[in-house]
Length: 269
Image (spheres, rainbow, N blue to C red):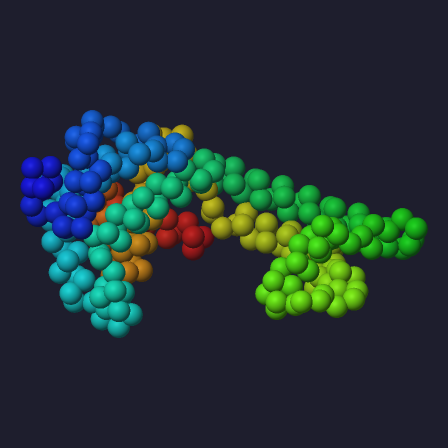
């Protein structure tokens, strides 16, 4: 196994890497900044290759193993019940998968989108409420649950409670109850309007969505959040090492601090 991975790499990942390349051999180098949609099999193997072969990962793995042994409280419980190397590998994959689903909108574009949604929800709610003065015009008495959905729910209840003989009128009763549980449509629109306005102020979106390094910045912030959650600290050096190894470029501690600081400042704004 040492032939295809460094001896200092965590054994669980060395084994996983060996299985991945046993038939095809080591992967060809590639730029993981080019992951736009879902990460493919070749990119997964190259990501794993970097985690077990790039020299920058040696210090990262050594540091994380030591910190795992010094964890306390809930962090200690997590460290003892998880393989830290396997967990980091899965986290890295998860970040790439999240990136593939993240709309490539700037913060200004996101703010404009959510503001537009809030305005439309408010306008529609106001229009519907204006119709309540004349029952003949009202659209608020519509059942929001289709008969087919009621049938599916009844069938599920029969299975859950193993009812041999469904009681008479169950469809009507379930339909009435389900519709009663729903808030009035105008109330739902008001909630949608308020939520969209909060989203518009939340600085959602990417700093520079069209930059080749947008994915690197995204990865750095997500990895930093992961370390804070599971290791109880901002491990800027470890974020720098892991990011540099994965993207095969120099992601400095200073740049990590700047990215994390900017992200925190934006959320607080």
